Structure formats: C-alpha cells, structure tokens
Length: 469
Image 1 (cartoon, helix red, strand yellow):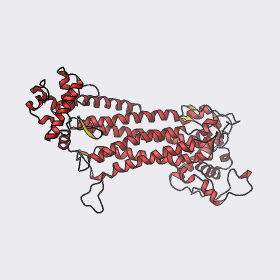
Image 2: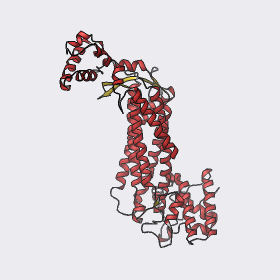
Image 3: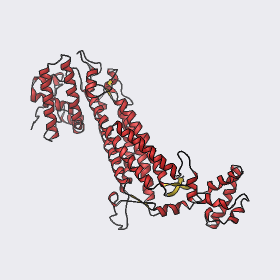
Image 4: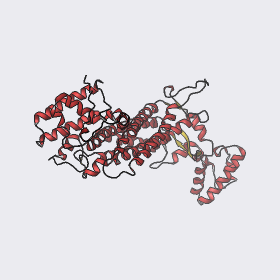
C-alpha cells in the first residue's frame, strides 16, 4: 500500500511559509473530488500518449507513466490508497503517487496542462458517463410505464382539471402522458451531452501552452467530439454543469408530479391504486398506516435539486474570466444531483411494475362529478344546436343533477328532454363512460384503440433508441 507522507505542495516554490492548517483543510477538495479518480487517470493517460506522439516525452517515459497510472488506479480500486488533505485534490494526490512510483518521468506528466483544464476535462468525462447511465434508467422507466399502460388499456378513471373531475379517460392514456414527459427529458439530456462533449484539455491555465501539443488527437483518444475553441472559455465554462442540473430539475419536477398523483391515488379518499409494501412504510404509532414514502421522498428530493440549480447559477454569475477557486464548489451539488436523480429513476422504474389498480373504484369515481357533461353538449351540437346554447342547456341539466344527487347517466329520457327536445333515446350511448372514452378516437385521444396504437409507436421509438446505444 502506498502511503503519501509528503506534505510539500507541488506549487510551493513561490511561497515562504506553509499553508495554515485550517486553510489547508478548508480549501482542499480531495474529500469529494476523489470520486473523479478514474476519469482523472483516463485523461492523464491520453495526455501522456499525446505528449509522446509529439515528442514532448519519450515513449519510454510514456510507458512508465501509463503503467504507473494503472497501478495507482488499481490501488484506488482496491481501497488501499491513502488520500492526503495536504495534497488538496484528486489531481495532486494521483500525480504525487505516480512520481513516488516511477520517479522523474512522473514529474513530466503535467507538461502542457494545468489543473484548470484538467479538472474541467475530468468533470466532463465523468458527467458524460453519468448521463449515459441516467438515460438508460429513463428508458427502463419508460418501458415500465408502457407495460402498465398496456395492462390498464381499458381501465376508466376520471381525468382532472383543477383536481376536479373533468372527463373520463383511461388509465393507460394517463400513463402515456407521463411517458411523454420522459421523452422530452431524454431529449434534453442527449442534447446536453452533445454540448458537454467538448474537450478543455490543452487550454492549460488559461492561455494555452508553448509546447507543440495536438489537442485534436487527445480529444480523439478521450472520445470528445472536438477540443474547445477558446482557452479562456475552456477552463472557466461550467455551462454544461448548469445545463445538466436544469435538465435534471425538470426531470425531477416530472417525477414529483407523478409522486403527487400516486400519493393522492393511494390515499383512502381516492383508493385508485395500491403501492407494493416494499415501497411503503408504516407508522410508529398508528398500526393501520401504509405510507407512500418513496413518492414522498422523491417529491422532497426535487426541492433539493432545484436548490442545486440555483446554487450553480449563483456560483457562476459574478466570475470574471478565467478560472477562479469558486469553481471548486461546482462538484458537490453536481455529484448530489446525479446521485439523487439516478436513485429516483431507479426506484420509480422498480415501483411502476408493482402497482395494483382498483379498477372499480376508478370507474366509480369517473361516474361522479358529471364527467360526461361535455359529451352531452357535443351530442346537442351534432343535433344542430350552437355550442354556447348547448353549453347552457347542459349546465342547467347539471344543476338539476346536483339538486337531485344524481349523475347525467342516471336521468330518465323524459328528465333529459325537459332541457332539450332534441334529445332522443340514443343519448345514453354517449352518457356511458365507455362511450365517452371511445368517442375520443383520434391521434392523441383517450380511446383505447388510440392508446394501444400510441403504445406500439412508443415501443418502436424505444427500440430505435436502444439499437443506437
């Protein structure tokens, strides 16, 4: 096991006094940026390979550097690496360990780069990989939603506006609305990934380097689309972190909306669904309770990620070019955003396949609140009555139903005809819940055959995405 007892800073030559112990601990980032170690080593291997190609280091030095970095990576993987606070960050810890292993060649690795472009590269490499994982979790959740939507294709429930019963819909149709939100989330993350896939390495501290480096070659080695055009911007840009966190905040907002509905629907007052026991907890005092803790916690974590977005925007808003120490504060909110977003997506993908629908309760709720009132108005319009007049006629019928405590579908034909003589006995086909949802038979509508076709199209889109990945 390698033990770094050295406390001298690699940059200490200019200073006459050691760093105050508290300042040393306060300014160090190694406690959290050590999670970047694999990407730091990946970037260093590519950098060393480029330096050798350009004749800046020898091939013997390159091979020693790469072998040493691989040995350091194995030591970290094994949990046998001692991280040093005096060495400040992941970069200096790894470089110091490398030099201790291979000697003089290790000191040459940092030629033509700075920690400024190094950390910007590391974070981009790390976030690029995390976005790929997150996108896979989105696809897994989307698949779970489609499976549930297909199972509940004909399950009728009330559709709401203002949380008031509006019109009957199918539960499958409702789930496809959730699916559509995730499609936009996926596209945002893919677009974000495209913009972050630009390499800062070689920008050095801020102005570039005097060494004859080949940044395009390094970018190719690391899988970046291209090197960053401007060295000042390359080391100071954190737009990619802000953009990702904004996309994450929108995605979490969507999951929070799902959570709100699941919490409502699983309550005794709605009783539309039941979440599996493994996604709920009980009360320490009330034995009858089954609390929807998972959706509640996802709803709570949404606010946390909103806070990270505001924090990153505020972090960057007053920074002059180029790099500033402020940027050390970008990592913890970004790391926390990724961790919680992945967790929320994973638990949702697992939970959706374990939802039990109380179909009769959903249907009963759809029969309340005069959910087929619009269908009656449309029926009158088809009989030649202007929509505004039809609206008034149905409003009077609803008022009568409120007084009587009965739904429109429970009226007799003679009761309906007192509001309009245009109504005949075929009206009951449109006042049924099945007739109402079946009538919305167009692209994007709630009719079961349209929902079935939408599920087929959605599966084709997911298969196309999976084929590319």
